[in-house]
Length: 164
Image (tube, rainbow, N blue to C red; front, side):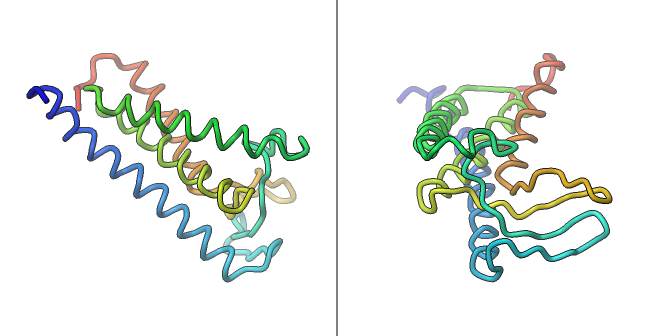
């Protein structure tokens, strides 16, 4: 392995570790919610936030949730494909904000992908609301994906930022 290639693998490790931390934190919370809360339970924590235990068979905003079951395998394949691509992309030198974005998306994809493989559904547990209007429940993996996309957009808008 040549020197530049070895350096890029070393740099990639820190981003892969961050992705692993995001996915493991999400899976640990999902395990705790699934173990300690009955399905459908909602625990009010503030005037705008509940901890809930709900399942999502679809994607964001329950997209394709009622598609008959095939969507599980589609979303597993998509998560694994995106994860592999992101892991490879993180081996190349990137701006820090862009690498952070890829890493957060990778962690989120792995967290939700593993959940689909093991449970057949994604456990969601964060419920934010205003009066009687509730944002669709989501989880830490979803948050990682959204923050990751935001980082990539920021990196795209600021092309002069440093390399990792």
